[in-house]
Amino acid sequence: MRVLWWRRVWHTGIGGEPQPGGGLADMRRFGERVIEGIRYGLRAGVYAVLPRDGMVLTTFQEAPRPEFQLPGGGIDPGEPPVRALSREVFEETGWTIGPPRRLGAFRRFTYMPEYDRWAEKVCTVYLARPVLRHGPPGEPGHQAVWMTWDEAEALLAVEGDRHFLRLARRFA
Image (cartoon, rainbow, N blue to C red):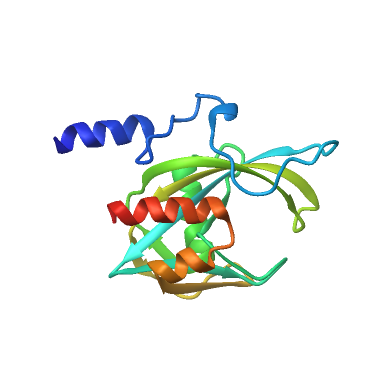
């Protein structure tokens, strides 16, 4: 039974959503509505739900607007998504992670003031375990913050992050 469940996870993600290639139109959307007349650039990113000892590791980003987030960020050109995830988590939290499992993906349309651009963000979310803290976050303006699952659900700024946090809680 467990083998079949993991086969389903491998092909669809834990959330039962199609893997990339199913088309953006079929992907669940969260957040702000699309503004007519705005040209949105595609921005792929990877994010992680990071549970350990009944808590969740999040990041607090001070600017451009103060908010709690799932650690993660953009995928550099030519960079494999899992490598990008490990890099982003390390930069924003100072922690390395164990092998991630894909939960699913969502998209959102937003203005990114740090880049002065409008983006259609395609966000792939993974479940991973924080393994080792190497020190404070290397990315300026970020703090690693441990919180309970309930605190994280209440404080994460992005609706899609909260959705996948609730999903991950069932599997953590």
